[in-house]
Image 1: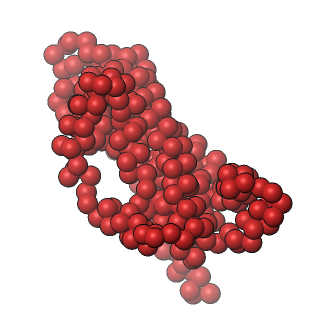
Image 2 (image 1 turned 180 degrees about the horizontal axis):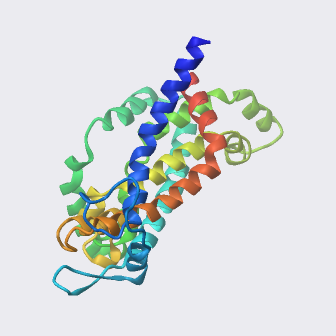
Length: 288
């Protein structure tokens, strides 16, 4: 009984600490005061002005100038890039993980280790190389050059392997190979086995990888800030930093409102996929 009481206490404290930043963001978003030091858990002057300012597409600076803030465009760019990157990451990762799980070929073990070791290097080590590659690629294929969302998606796909492949490979290992043999005896082709037998059974891990990729891409700042050069092409993390970098005189209320709206797609996606998450993580971890 005492152990159960302590468990509930620890769980309650953990939940309270987890929700504390969220409550502060909500309070700041509905607070009329743009100063962060004047914000509190309960807003003193509740207003929707911060949200109206974001959705109107312009704001007033400290000097009285009207500045354009294409927040809706940033939001759309982020959703487009994150959705495309998540779907393509799941597709590429599933193909690679299936090959590593089901086939035996020379260099298989070394390939798996290489994918894992590459994750040791931080992404900013490749920023210069990525910039130069897109700069030269844009001369031949303009839609893949700098300041293009397509080019940014392709760059994100460069990190689609690694941990994702290991996670999916571990889950594929839990799917009995006898199912493949049975489908093969019935005349199914390798493509039919992959798409019709294995992938439906691997839906939990595909949902987990897609969710992780979506959230990671939606929050990514460094690469997007380097490759996207015009305001209309920027994603939310790049555009939102202007509200706290003196350009808009540090409008923390507007920044909090933008962050709160940006969290809606993540919450909706998480709620839609929550029944897959635990199963996708535990099965892959046990077998992998």
